[in-house]
Length: 280
Ligand SMILES: [Zn+2]
Image (cartoon, rainbow, N blue to C red; front, top):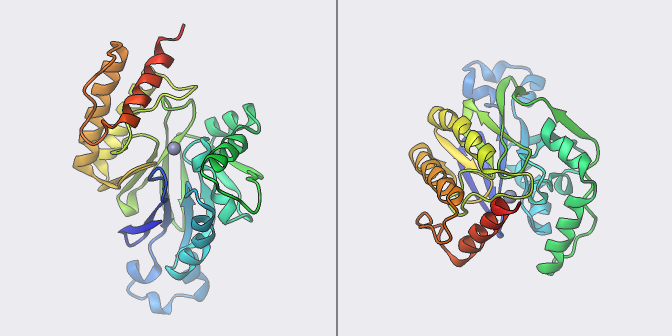
């Protein structure tokens, strides 16, 4: 597991597998914004470090390390968010079982519509990687968030924007105070666009069009898988993804995949995308 601070109020935690990113995000600490911070009441100072965890790492030891990591770095995790309903983004409650998972309305609809699917996918992945877990994944009481919408984090406002195309559900989160866009499984520098069940070229394109101005307005983008990207790099990935969707729509069997995303594995993903979009 790799931990990188992309902003004083944002830590990116990258799993050892799939380069899956989770983000610890907090409001600015009182003393950073208020020169008289030393005089502020203890209660205020505490609420100023209120934090949330967006998405999750995969391995049990990574999840187990998260609460201490958060505590020691001054992130008081009081909320969990998942960018979409794929199992690899839903594991926050294995680290913080007492917290509810906040998801977009579309994600909550998907999870209710396919009960047990995420748990089954997790069990399959665990079996494939010889992973043992102490307890099964329980999604508990979910908090359904209207998207587009806003969310408060210790006095700062987070923007929630709808995403779809990879799957039918999801949201991207803009944390303006940290100059960050957390976009889920879009804009990855390690993976071409993946069209899963529920996804489509049309909605993927609409999502990229919606994300473009958000990328322009932030410093960095943290995709669900891959490296945190500076704005310019993220815009290049976005252009490459638009080109890729064109090639996919034209049914190209061997399109030139973007540099760094042209491995055998990515060619397999392309073949799967092609099968999905050409299925009757
Ligand atoms: Zn994912």
